[in-house]
Image 1 (cartoon, rainbow, N blue to C red):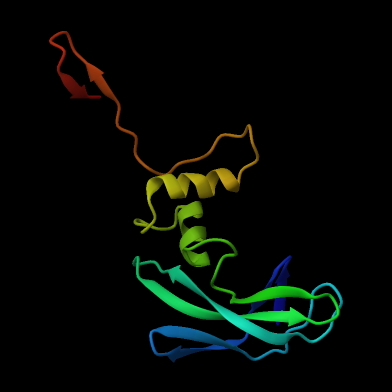
Image 2 (cartoon, rainbow, N blue to C red):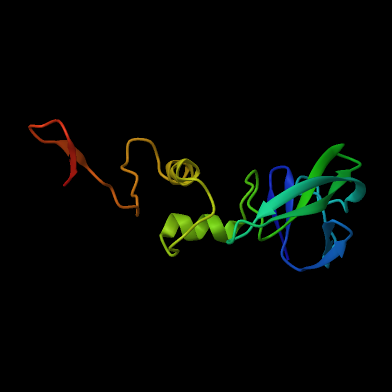
Length: 144
């Protein structure tokens, strides 16, 4: 089964094959253009990395596919990759739902993910512990 993103084809049935320092995704479905339904032809490939739950970076050579009638290029990505993100989809969803004790992403990255998934004006929930520092009369900091 294939899902479509405006410029990407998201493969759900595939085989991950190691090819030297890179992995390739062998799609078991025939990719078709999301605009016109024409079978896409292989154009070239591009490098992309994905970061897993442990912070390991794996490099992939992903196919770019061309629609001859539309003259558009589409990137074919596996379903564990999030479009336009470096971290795997599972890492992002676990960080957003708070189902993990640790995430390899920086706190600022996780805050950005949370703000992207909430409409403006709504509070962003955080699962991290906040430490408040107050000053006493001597000017020394103490934890509250």
